Length: 163
Image 1 (tube, one colour):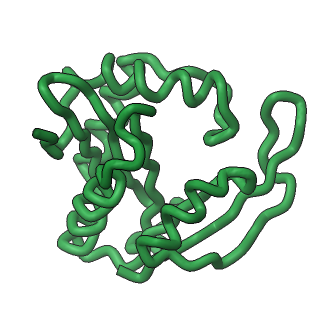
Image 2 (cartoon, one colour; image 1 turned 90 degrees about the horizontal axis):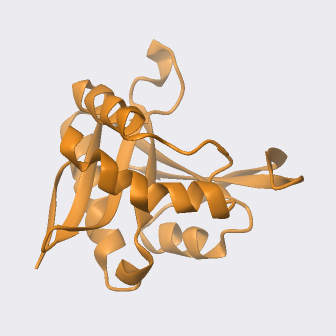
């Protein structure tokens, strides 16, 4: 049975084990620097202090994925506009876990009074674009060649959902 719950600092090593291969080996994120358990524990604490949240999905003690959100851009004018990240372990994909994590994240954001959730997706990540479209996110823009990783530029697709 899969459980979705708020993350704790104790989850940080398992989150790193899931996230760092994505950082290291893919263009899903433009960030080239792997996260440490301390980085993740700090992120969990910061997001949960608000605005934001950090959820994990696990089964039988195995981390299957996580979803988190925080303010889209700094400043009071963006205080109700959030941006999220979601990552699943390869073996957890295609089983309905992604929509469940997103529902938990969006419900939390709504209850906190937030209005918009943003997805910032690497232009070549067609699977993520389809995933978000299926959840009601709409394409609001593409920023050509703003990301740099693995010796080349990458587009950034922006999608959003009014909560």
